[in-house]
Length: 335
Image (cartoon, rainbow, N blue to C red; front, side, top):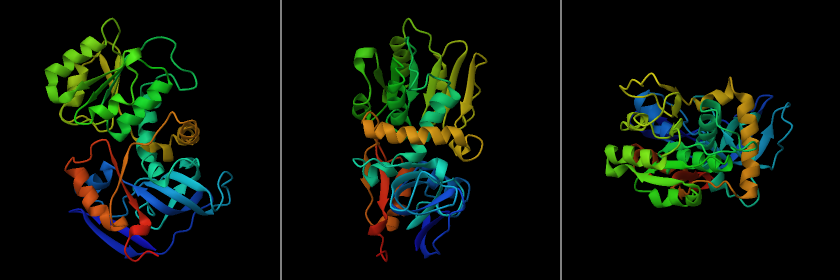
């Protein structure tokens, strides 16, 4: 099979590799579309990791392990490949654990499914695992403000959708160029707002105060965790507030009144398997019901041959409210 190996300098080499075999609790998936994430370039550039960096899988089940009971060959599935392990989604075939695999409803495309796994799971781990917000099936019964910084990112957009399902309002969303996209996700009738970070930190702080007037501001999800976003949001959080993000804060010490955490989504493959199991199955239902939608996708030409450009664009911050995905069949040399 063809497989793309990413290394330092964002070099991408397409090699011939043997088709992997699933263990007893795994699924072998013939990849139709692979998704990408910012971590794909960061592993190579910041941690000098060489390997198949893809973790978002959408395709068709080829083979299952002896303990797998929910999936069979021929099923259309999405899956979250285990980070830093072999046999990722930048290949014709990939491996996923059964607890991190989900059925794709008929009306959901492979491109849409490839935009979901890692980012959606990061969103739900942040909202429900770290912030302890009401689950969608036991929604909030009173107003509770939630700040979502980076609401147009994949993680942020999925957090908005799940928070709405949990009846959490007002949602105070912070975005920039892609603000119009965020407007399609919120409910203005329930007090939800979008604040433009391009107006400056002082304007963001004032916007947060105005949007949360009369309410305690106790929850914040920083879906970008860059450019001093933690510090800006923390200025207006009340005593006992919780803030969680996707990256550790850079040279910032939180005030004693705030508890902070970082979402380690890879834990759903180790210490939080049950969490992953439940929410991936819930995502199937959410897609089927139509209240949950994938972030818009941009199909990068060339299949695996387009990975280098996509990762360079991700590094340069060119992706706005879009997921870069790769159709494997577009790869040179793939039948």
